[in-house]
Length: 364
Image 1 (cartoon, rainbow, N blue to C red):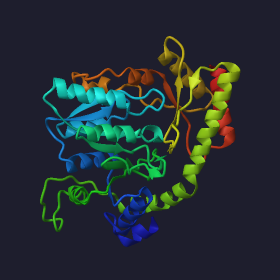
Image 2: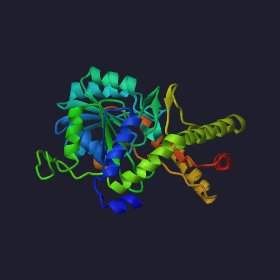
Image 3: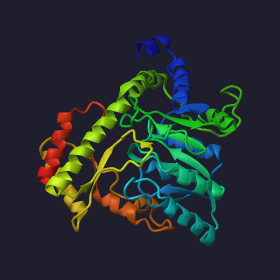
């Protein structure tokens, strides 16, 4: 931070180019283009793919608003798809149903799929990508919460045709403000995104060859991320997985011993999560929303914070009211009523985890 202040290169300074090199090497792609935030990263990806009015883009119904907001901002139509109830990520069966319905019943042109790595777990890209490419669709990986996750030996932000992430402070790799990045192996898209993020510049910033946006990563944030990336790679990713394992062990033991009716997150074989959140699901009661609210209040009373991600499915958001519900999304609706995210970070101690689980068991 002191070096950046001394240099005076606050915008697109040396630390930005260095960080981009480090990120593309870690992820395993040809190009990493940083930008101002994760939402802009998605916007830049959509612009590079030429998505606009009359196009349909398939988005999971259970995710943060930005995943669909960017589609609408480009004039395209978000088509909401249901999710798997155990992984919380896009369900390929629902995606196929939505693709067929758009083709059969609308005049929209199906163009792309945005698959989200929710809570740190990569989506099922083997199925999603095969299905999308079968229908001639691009695949965009929204890795805002997934940086560091893996499927086999392949890392998050290397899946699909183009990928994005966010460096918002709450993300697995977070800076001290806002930041984002786009990843791709496509040289043409990478060149276009580098232009788009600086007002559509050409050979220099006063030769604008297209309409772009102003979305550059601050040098200060890049310098901070460079340091934090080392910690993330060296020990944070391993530590946060140990915390998650301890949570699951204690909760699942409690389920057997004390009949506590909650489900822990499921990580499919061959997958690794970066645990942006550790999210349990209340799997009983006629009104899980009411029970969750009471559980939250009891945990808060003993100094344990929790969060609900997300209380409203995308298709039920006020901003999308009136948009055609192309396929039913019962799993997304159920999850919005029953999920609860517990304290989670790489520096959480065993005694902290034990205290949280003990409080949950007592409350239930």
